[in-house]
Amino acid sequence: MSRLADPTDASENLAVYSILDLLETSFLTADSAAVLHPSMAEKGQERNRYVRAIKRCPPPLRPEEESHRHSGWRAARRRAICAVRDAGAGPSRLARLAACGAGAHVEHSPTAGVWRIRAHYCRDRACQPCGRARAAVVVANVSPRIDLGRTRMVTLTLRHREGPLLPQVRRLVRSFAALRKSDLWSSRAKGGVWFLEVKRSRDGLAWHPHMHVLVHGRFMSQVQLSDEWRKVTGDSYIVDVRIVDSVAEATRYVTKYVSKPVDASVGQNHDWHVEYLRDLRSVRMLGTFGSWRGESILGGRDDPEDWVPMGSLWYLIHKRGGGCDYARHILDQVERGSARGGMPPYRLEVLPAGP
Ligand SMILES: [Zn+2]
Image 1 (tube, rainbow, N blue to C red):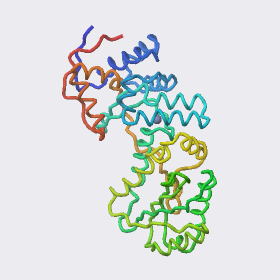
Image 2: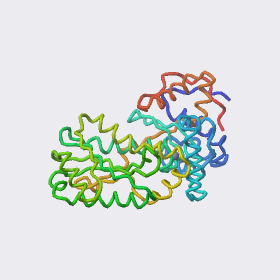
Image 3: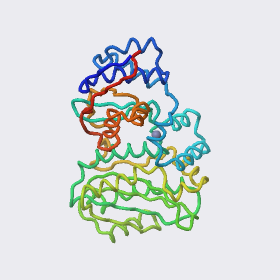
Image 4: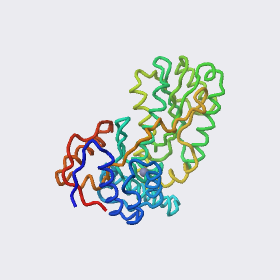
């Protein structure tokens, strides 16, 4: 049965596309789909059932979904999953990691005019696309606090030492806590956010953990900071202080450290990668201090409440491949990155049969 849909009527498109997709992917039964079908877009209760059903039953990752989410880091992803496995992860973490991006549905908010993809996301720290999503949230939370002229980027390093990673990271975290209590720091830094980064030294013989900090406050000289850092660490004095010139620069800085699951110098070697994941399992990779403490850096932003499912990602990709303008328009909106835009201007001429 073919149906003509009004392209401005999101619920019409939703009803036909989504239910077919849900049936296709077998994570709803025909009965539950029949219950949901007529009013899924209009009735909140039905919509909640649909969301709960998707959450409960993670489907396998389809090739189209894998390609959409993971094509940019296939080899690194394979290495990451092997390293997570060998670092002692249980089957559920591995399954979540392997299925990240499955059950992907495109959704549209008519009131906000934005698009997004809802899917099973692993949110694992070893997952690159989840890291990018986390970085976008941190950037959105940090950007409004950047005060040009009063925000600085500070790097604190530890002298290279051979030996296991975890004691060195703990020492770095302890030293940073001691630095924050010093007169120099407390008189000049009001608050900020820190990010932990771990590399291997150039000769590959030692771990090289360091702290990148966005600091809001008054001028701090590199020489004084270096002296203070040597006092609290006993042996390390290499520090860097730079003023933030633009919000874009701060955004790049944050994105760089939050989105990267592992530095390339570590990820290239399986044993180092495993040690990194195992040792840092319970170590926080970022945090706030001073007047920024308690501010939600990873918290959600205001989210529209009227998300309307527009069809499963794999099906839209499949339709676009067949020349469907409607699917192409929707995927353009989603893939452009801004994920902001209106409903498709195209009529959807032939829809698959309804349930
Ligand atoms: Zn993920």
